[in-house]
Each structure stands twice: as structure tokens, then as C-alpha cells.
Image 1 (tube, rainbow over the protein chains, first blue to last red):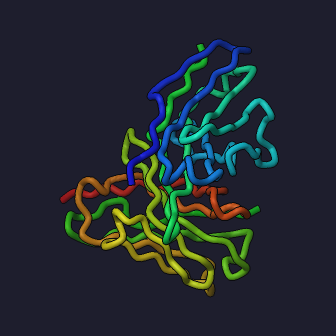
Image 2: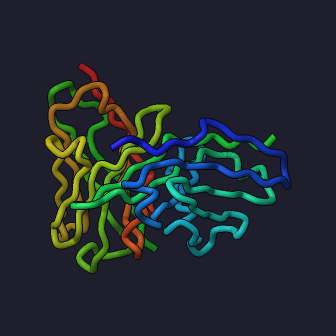
Image 3: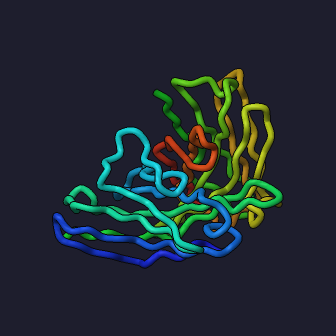
Length: 112
Length: 119
């Protein structure tokens, strides 16, 4: 099972919006609306930001939103803030005959 | 609120077995949910290792399945990971996490523990 493809880095200025893409296949992203997104600050554990493609856990800012088209999922962060600077990982359920999850390689977000 | 804490040796010799435990507080494992292990090699991305249900049903990453065993001890409210025949490629920060209520995401996570494979 190959990892999902994410851009290595994206950047934006405070107040702007950015979008991070996550490309998979018809066996994972394309088959299920079960993509999740995680934020990871240096030296910290990942934090769930989006689940089931577009749902936000309690406590996560509504500046974070998720979507999907075909085999590609996207995370959009609007109104960029300095504290949004972190690594972001997508993850998709990829199970067919058994449970299986695949992660993306991660995207470094820099707030200029 | 539920909290998870990994523990185990930080250094393992090549060809030996890596063993880690995840202690859960604030929630009884026997009440439900899936519980998982995820790892992150230094400077690299995340990789799902496997997950276990409170009843003991297990699911493993196909690429690691031959070397992985995950077990649960409800009496101690913890679950464990064993990875056999380790090599330097298994050097990583190992995280334990609970699957969320949907079952398809991971939330929350433990703080992670670095395991280095070296002689």
C-alpha cells in the first residue's frame, strides 16, 4: 500500500487561505469518504483536525475545512495565523477485506 | 478525558524484539473503541502499524503483519506492541492512539516514545 501524496511544503501570509492536497487511489481516498487530517507541531503528537473528510472535532477552529474530489482530498485553512505553522498529514481508510489505514508523507506549512 | 502514555526500552538491538506498552487513563479499554499503534521515523511521515479492539480482535498493516503482535490487558487498562526482527529501519517515534467514535480516525494520541535500533 503506497503512501498518499502530499506537497512537501506550502506557505502563506497571515490572514490568507491555503489548501493542502492529498492524492490517493481508487482503493483508498476514492473509495471512502474517510479521510482525516492531523496537525503536528515540532516534537509534539499529531492532533486530529478533520475526520470523515469534512467534519471538525469539538474545539477545532472553523478556519479548518476538508473536502474531496475523486481520488484527491484537500485541507483548507482560512485566515492563516502564526500558530497554524506546523506539519499536516492526511490519512485515509484503505481497507477492503480487512482494516487498513494509509498516511500521506506530510506537508510543512510555513506562515510567512 | 482519556490520556495515553507509551513506555518501553528506548534502545533495541538489531534482530531483537521491540516491546512497548500503552497505558490508558480516563477511560476503560473494556468499554469499547479500537486502539492503535502508529510510528514516525525521524524526519519522515506517519505509518499505521496496527489496531486492536477491546475484545482482542487485531488488524495489522499488511507490510508489517509478519512481525507485529498487538495485545490488550483490560485488567491493567493497557495494550501492547511487539515488533520482531527489528532493523535500523524500525527506528522511529512510536505513538499509541485511540480510534475516535467513528472508528476511522485517531484521537487522542499519546506523546510518543523514541525507539532506536542499534547495536
